[in-house]
Length: 209
Image (cartoon, rainbow, N blue to C red; front, side, top):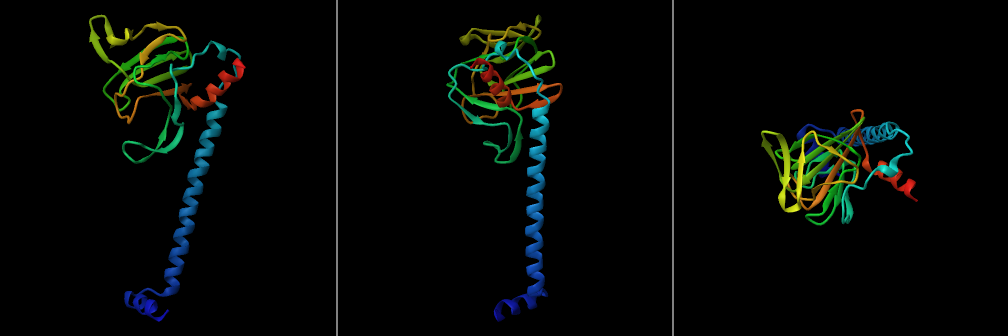
């Protein structure tokens, strides 16, 4: 390949050096992908170990009515809005706009907001568990009695500090925040550690069989 060699010599680069650079770059890229894969596997393994063994999952509720499909799982993904590769800390459950969202586990409403990419959001504390619900209908209002999520057309009025039983209707599926379609983004945290909600759902369903 005399033409290629002449061009490389003109640039001050030998053909052998170019081959070395290509091979080295390929190895480094493979090592980077391997490291990223191992970190994901380690995260998943750690995630699995943090879930406590319990025989009371029958008390828990599936978090949305009129469920259609799981549209985005827990883990790395290409963000549908930004196009960036990001870790997705929850589980996306598609359902028709306006479908009711049900409280997964009895607890206390500890936070309400409607000003982030999560859209209108509810956060509930149930002992060591924290569960978050995003992209809901309605808005959060400040009143003399405290903050309240208001979705009047759905008959939803949910207050910070309110005690909510498992299975109670707490909101409706909306399209607030950064979203490309109606769905519930649902997060579970146990003792400060994000948990794959699909793992919990599998345990719930196993006990109902």
